[in-house]
Length: 382
Ligand SMILES: Cc1ncc(COP(=O)(O)O)c(C=O)c1O
Image (cartoon, rainbow, N blue to C red; front, side):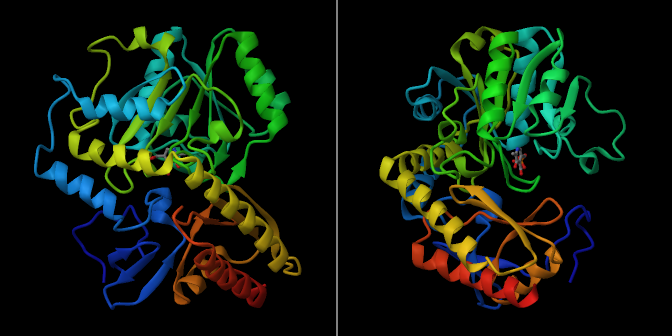
């Protein structure tokens, strides 16, 4: 049932979801699925969240879009919400890759240098700058010359990182938990070396929180989990809960390098998107909400460790908050298909990992039900 008018750049499953409800999706045959994907880390607040629907419909009846030629108090509001107590300013765009493009431009403009260190197996997006930052050759292959200046080094390897820093280095740019690369968290000791290197050499520290941000790892940002203060943070995915919106936050001293006319986007930060983002941040950035995400994350890691302790195919269980990975020697596409047959949706990451990104509003009971399906399936197939 392929549509010959679509370019074949996605390997789509022959199932269409037509309705969502909290942490569940319903396909066109009315079958109900428990969703451990959140639309790849997007619907952190689940589907059909009433307050988001209210915010969106209210704004839809007022005004959808004004160009960035005029004041936009919704942008001002969301920028303040995202900054919180951090002295950071925001630029709004429409996607993760655009947020990273903005970061790359700001790094180059501010430092006057071109070299940016990024990491093997990282993923930063599909446009040329973000693609070039990405440390996976499969993402570059066939597209000719990449944007110059990116140096990829092994993740969690202090020696390799120190060797890579030169006079020309402008910034270190990383995911704190590599998502697409296999749900690989940064080691604490390595990250202190990263921060120290940035301090010693005057490098900017830029963190891609497109996947880890917006409560996913149990704090608003993974940088809060790791207690670091990056110069630049990029966001998208969960920021609009499904309405396309991205953001780059930058420390105040960088602001002068993004003077009027240096960068922009027609749709970036439009009123429809930002009316939803304002409500999203409101709902996620509360201690009760985030503490529960953290608790559910710990619960999941313990539950999986116990349930899979005798499963010989499982080689690692890891993650932060509700960003979880199970590494296994089993056939991963086959495993994902078996889980989907049991009405549980999960994602792949890297070659050998299933990635779980359940909506953050999931209850422990729902979470446990999904984890039980995974444990049972892996145990049987392993
Ligand atoms: C860490 C990270 N950065 C950037 C991106 C690109 O985001 P988008 O697909 O919205 O351009 C992704 C998407 O998966 C991501 O996981």
